[in-house]
Amino acid sequence: PKSEGVAGGRFKYLRYIEQNPVYEELYDLQNDPKEKENLAVKDGYADKLSEMRQRCDELVKQSI
Picture (cartoon, rainbow, N blue to C red):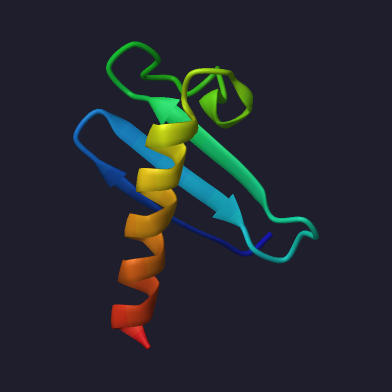
């Protein structure tokens, strides 16, 4: 499936853009380098998810 994302520092964010609704993944690469626990669906990560989503939006707009 088509996806886009961003990695920066400790976290990696991905979203699958052909799904409705869009499916998102957020990983803490420091504590979960094999990306097994999707933090996008966990309580306590809403702010980080929003931050990474916004950064991804910015990068997508720059590439157009």
